[in-house]
Amino acid sequence: MNNTKTIYADYSATTPVRQEVIDAMLPLYKEDFGNPSSIHSYGIKAQKYLETARNNIAAVLNAKSNEIYFTSGGTEANNTVINGIEILVEENLIKKKKHIITTKIEHSSVIAQVERLQKKGWQITWLNVDKEGFISLEELKSNISDQTALVSIIHANNEIGTIQDLKNISLVCKSHNVLLHADAVQSFCKVPVDVNELTVDFLTISGHKIYGPKGVGALYIKSSQKLPPLIIGGGQEANLRSGTENISGIVGLGIAAKLLNSEIHQIASKLRQQQIRLMEKISSSEDKKFIFTGVEINKIKENIPNEKFLYRIPGHISLCIKDTEAESIVLQCDLCGIAISAGSACSNLDLKTGESTLKPSHVITALNIPKEYEKGSIRITLGKDTTNEEVDYIAESLINIINKLSAKKTVLK
Ligand code: PLP
Image 1 (tube, rainbow, N blue to C red):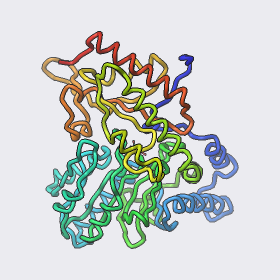
Image 2 (cartoon, protein in one colour):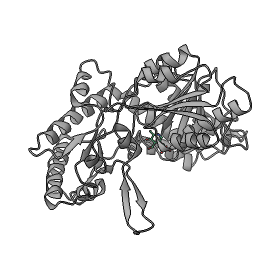
Image 3 (spheres, rainbow, N blue to C red):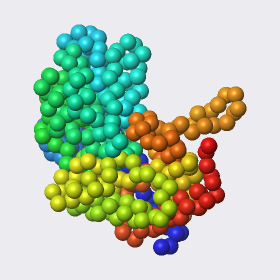
Image 4 (cartoon, rainbow, N blue to C red):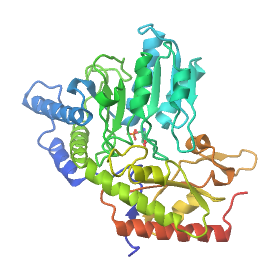
């Protein structure tokens, strides 16, 4: 493998915008630059683009077009839901109490909002996860009540790729008449996400994880539900999200979703094979100085024949390396021409010593893995154009790097 070329293996962080999406977006910057709120022909044309994109997203989610609201991304959509529920409860617009159930492995855009409410006196239940990252339906059932305002669950976790059993989670929520929000940023267009089958009330998606542009996403709100806005002003997006629409981004999101969804089974099946190939090759390393995190290989293999792609995002691999800082691995990989990610460890500055100490991410902490592995969490995520040759090069390089770092004892004690 020629290592002058960089292999991108960080597709859960973001993806390149595919050419068809760029081509579809370009007219919006040039001749079709109208504002959809204008009533002249430029505005009417822009309005048509907007509604076509809305139809595209609705079709992929099996939703109605008027259930799709465009946002600036997944973060804003998640914030809109939690912030909206807060207003509904505090203004007595729904007959629920200040109780939210979520998980210990949410994205920071949910955690930050929920922690804000916790500080205001809301009761928050943080569901545990098992060693593969799954919540327990029993724990959910035992914490839920008709006073619970919202259950917010990350559909597929960004760090370890675990896909929750949203269908059964939604059945529990429905039986208690409790609203359910799913953050589907990492699962959308990678595994089938059908809002009718999953019976969620709110669902978050984002453009830049699906070969679409950054800074655009959408929130699905079931037609029987209503949320107050997070951003107010000119009343765009049926008053949920004011501000002149990011039309080019929205068109890009719509096309990206339509295209990726049309290839979903073919790409997921290729990525499933490559995920297994990579995990098996890494496992073949003689001296195992790591543990895989997330769903185990045998469970992933079970998924191939029925193509349901449950349990784990196809092409997602995560592992923790013993007595090593993830950043060292990421930097060494970069030197070998491979772009991967550290599992979101955050750095803390010790004010007394002036030294920075790495803290394992909340996801790794929730998995309860042995201490000596906690700081070495890395993530490799493959994409639709990743080749088997690249997968083999990643495996070979990673094994060498792990062995080299362990030999040098780049360790944290
Ligand atoms: N939710 C999850 C699970 C994510 O992985 C991300 C982004 O990494 C987000 C939400 C935020 O989406 P965005 O980057 O569009 O704001």
